[in-house]
Amino acid sequence: MSTIQHILNLSLEQVVGDRFGRYSKYIIQDRALPDARDGLKPVQRRILYAMHHEGNTNEKPYRKSAKTVGNVIGNYHPHGDSSVYEAMVRLSQDWKLRYPLIDMHGNNGSMDGDSAAAMRYTEARLSKIAGVMLTSIAKNTVDYTPNFDDSTEEPLVLPSLLPNLLMNGTTGISAGYATEIPPHNLTEVLNLAIARLKGEVDTATDALEYMQGPDFPSGGIVMGRDGILKAFETGKGKVIIRAKSVVEPLKGGREQITITELPYEVNKANLVKKMEELRLDKKVEGVAEVRDETDRTGVRVVIELKKEADAEGVLHFFLKHTDLQLAYNYNMVAIVNRTPKQMGLLPIIDAYLKHVEEVVTRRTT
Image (tube, rainbow, N blue to C red; front, side):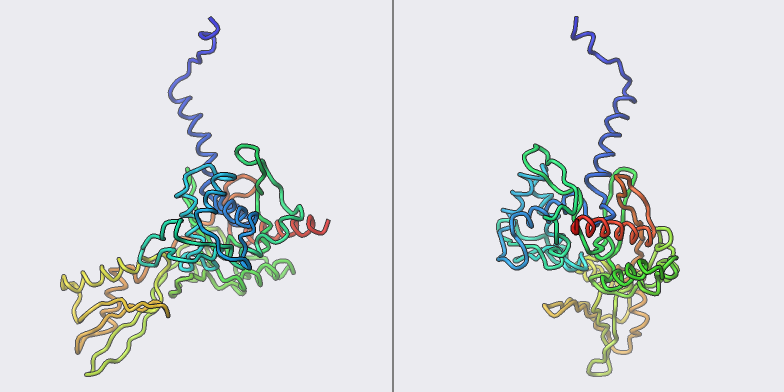
């Protein structure tokens, strides 16, 4: 009889609604969106804290990545090892992050979309800048929470005396929310924060004097000042990123277009392949060859032209039909007081300043 009394008569809508609501709350708060204070998602925070806690810091020797991944999933992040390692690799890629938080030894992928070597082959340690984000964590500067099995504790947020959300940006998709924040120049962000503290910045237009716009690690030319201003005001805005190129003379009166900087997150190998396909399909006239001459000194993609070819015309064709020019959409969403919020530039700066004030006060106490 007691068993029958505990059967709930619920409709499918109620059950699915309730379960999906819980799932959505979890992936919004604890997976895909960054905290406005330290600019980190939970998996990133756990990786950095685990490395710091184990003494895997910048002044010490590199340590096998597999050891760090095992430590993270054993103590803080009870999910698959591949998801932890992929997050770790991204934190070390200097063409994805403006200021990498992990210093990795070995093959950590490439701009051509190559994946990193397996975690048993690579070694890693915290970068110098990550050390600054963890400074004074031992001095009761942040709140802790029990880990998944109550065997130890993990920080709810890092002290982060650097504005990581703006300096490194982020990208993420959760339920009903997505976020897309580009990287910015650290010096500019800090100068803006100091000016905000002094009461010299009241509007997004004022902020433009200190921060010109995004600063992508892969370079490129950012166009669209109105889009940047709109993004700074509302958190949403569109800019155009164009590859940096120069026309160089060759022997025999010919020319070549040399590309040295690409738009953010463009796969270089796919780009070169697409340009070569357009040449072979005779969609563009006057191109003799497209080749990738990238080496350890930097990116270099060469479009060699035939005699009498119009360099400007060829370049404009490729800008229009390939990823040499892309639109980038700001969508600045972050977690504030456990709630996802679309924020303009000044609210993000204010959240960072409030956090730093709290950390410094607690450290001093």
